[in-house]
Length: 450
Picture 1 (tube, rainbow, N blue to C red):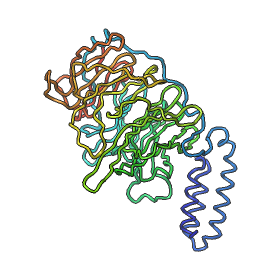
Picture 2 (cartoon, one colour; picture 1 turned 90 degrees about the vertical axis):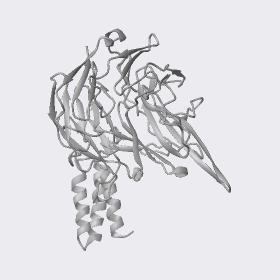
Picture 3 (cartoon, rainbow, N blue to C red; picture 1 turned 135 degrees about the horizontal axis):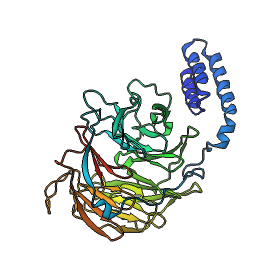
Picture 4 (cartoon, rainbow, N blue to C red; picture 1 turned 60 degrees about the vertical axis):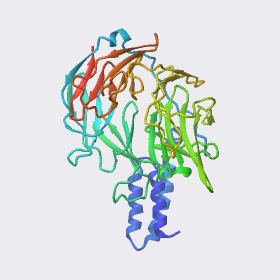
């Protein structure tokens, strides 16, 4: 092994150590990189890594789980369950009305990231006037915005995935920033509203070259799913991060043969993690080609084992924004899935559904007043608010911002008032406990509240 290779390997090892011992070990290793007498320094660094690892052993045994064989993960991945369903009734929601709130201090934005923390709506990024790392938070209780710590340059927001852990917001797009030394995995960030600070963490090196597609909070771990969709060579990666121990575990499942993953969706229920892998492959012949596609459904249980639970899950449609309600898995309307080499009509032909978290038996939600307009579903705790984001025309005529309400108890849809003036929404509105918050591309904020 060359000196440079040894430095790289030592830095990777040091990145696995607890925060308290990383800095001095990394400084020692970097000294070895800078000096000509590197062999002796590197030997000392090796010893330092070993000593630091031994010193950290009690914390590893008490919290961080050991590495395991592919397709398995230590038990205890799922933490406290989702709270029991609660929220306004359909009758109460029918009396809600829109009202204007103070505008975001970030102003005009394009595709910012929005997250609800339980107390505040966090807005991150959205390129505007060369500012792509701005950040702000809105408190419905105070009806005020505040600027928060700017997103570090090393944490990319374009195409990023986010998830709220109950205390911190996890964000990553899985890419190396320009001129970033590739001695550790791609960076991710944890934002803590209580301290108004960002912490940088590094993804496992095994995820390098893959793009994060989905992230969920299990009650104990952040689980991130990564994909490299390259036709017949699509690759899947899954990793779990425990914020309490600052430790990653690679928990990638083994997919069925000849099912290269192109896209995924994930949800954490009260006792397992469910992953949908949308796959396709193309078989080429002398005078043409044939395409094959489908959906594999895998479940990671408390025993740390992945199981194929595909059963009769529909093979010809995507899985959109699955959410665990506490008693069922809610999926928004989906479109045709026939692989990356086919050209289905651009229509969301399939309605949303509820799935039993134990059996995955689906109950289809009938199409409502918005028809096949690709409405985004917001779960209020008891009801569904569907919001039309971008489709116009159709029968009956629809406009962006048109809304409807679905009551699972009665199986009935009803219309709700659209945002006044039909402004352009930057993303799907966010349910904030007692109200729906909608942010427009101009930075205006609207509340749908009784």
